[in-house]
Image (cartoon, rainbow, N blue to C red; front, side, top):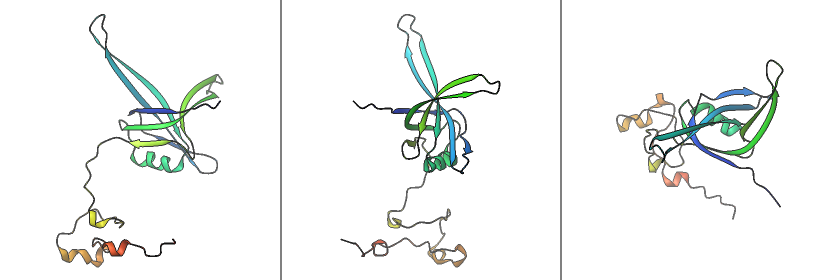
Length: 166
C-alpha cells in the first residue's frame, strides 16, 4: 500500500526569506508561515484565536528565485510541499529536532496570494516581451530609437509561427 506526504498551507510570512547557498551554488530559501484560526468559545462567549508557525525550506531553484524577489514579511501565500523532520546540533552541541515543510527540487508549489495593483495587459501585445515601464505620450514615441526597442503592439501575423511540425 502506498502513502502520501503532502502539506498545504495558506498563511502569512513571518519574516523576510533567508537565502543560503549549497556547496555547489544552489539556492536554499527558508522562511516561516503563520496560519491562524479563530472561533467563539461557547462556554464563555469569548472569541479565541490560535496561530501556528511552520518552517518552510525551498530547494527548487525556480521557486527560490520567486521567493527571493517577491516575498516580504507579511506576504500572504499558498505553499504545497512535503513534511520532513530534521535533526541537528545547536551551538552548544545539544541535539535538536525540527519539522519543516520542504519544497523539493522538482516538486512543490508556491503561489503569491497578495493583491497588487497591476495594469491590465494589452490584448494586442500577446506574445511580445517589453521591459519599458512608461507609456508613450504620442504615436511618434512608439519608434523612438532612444528607447532601444520597438514598442508597437505585435500583430497576430507577427506572432504566429507557420513551421508547425505536424
